[in-house]
Image (cartoon, rainbow, N blue to C red):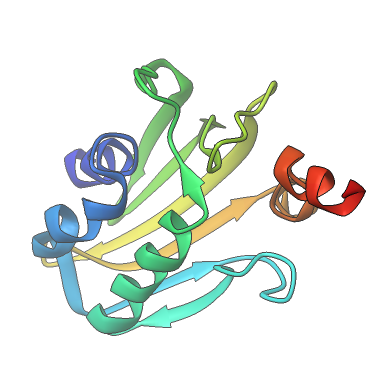
Length: 146
C-alpha cells in the first residue's frame, strides 16, 4: 500500500517529474490503462513498458496540473486485497490554468508482483474529462472575437 501512496503523492508533488521518482517501483512489464477515448481525452489508452508509461506522464502533464499548495491526502482512500490495492477518491488535478470548482471522482486498481507495480488502471468520469479538456479557454474566445 505504501507504493500506491507514493504514486498519488508523486502526481501532486512531483507532477511531470513523477515518472522519474516512481520508476523504481515499476515492474519491467508494467502496463497502465486509462479509460476513455483518446480522440477526446488525449492521454487515454494502454501504455506498456517504461518508455510508453513515461510518454503517458509527458502527455498527461502537458495538459494537466495539480492545484498549487493543495493537500491531496484527505481526498484519497486505500485498501489492500492480496497483491492488489484499490485507490479511490477525489482528484482536483485540472487542465493547466483552469482550476475545477468540483473534484472528479476516480478509482485506481494497482496490481503488484514481487513488490513492484505491474498493472495500473485509472477509472474516472470520461465525459467530464473530455468536457474540461475541450472547453474553450478565455484566451481562445478572445482570439475568436477579434
